Image (cartoon, rainbow, N blue to C red):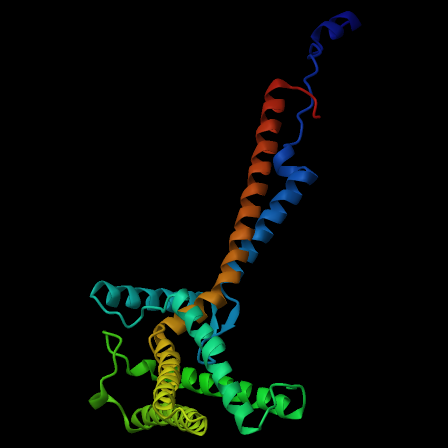
Length: 289
């Protein structure tokens, strides 16, 4: 065979094809970083529900368990409210504000007047130690009485029926003693005010008017103290307190989980854009950007 025949038998050269490009979205460095970050965010979102929180009674719970208990309590409260129960109803904001104003505007000035009369404050030249002692005692007495009544009313909510009322015959001995303490405290405040105002009035020579003023001031103090107790007593229930605690514990964790999921979704959209652009460029044979 001659050299010319060997040349004719050689395979013809094929046209060069454009070199296949790597898939930008799947194997490039940018795509790999996006996928790694997406997996990390999804892992963090899944782990959020395994974090631990402290329950309303000091128990150690996961976020998922606290979230489930909050759902059960919410369903229980909703069911009782649908059946007409008023036990879980909260006191509106206006009532709480009016109660605070009553204590501040009514009780405190009356207690200050009582203390100043006991310590003989000279109102023509009031500045001095007697006025300071009167202010301190009146503030302590007002805040202490209001705090005690609020605490007692708050603790008695477990004995509230579905009409937001107390049923005396169903109360335990401890609950009855607490209510008797409330009555004694309120009555003592009324008696002290009545005696002091009537004494001042009698010394001033206004016998009939002094008795009327004493009754009025004593009645105002009794109504104010009772308002503090009943406002705390009618404000929600123990189940609602637990629900509020669970919700406050779970809320930041759910927000973090949502943030992780949103970031993972945004990065997933970016990854899809890279992948589709790479597929179009591969189909057209265009060079990468």
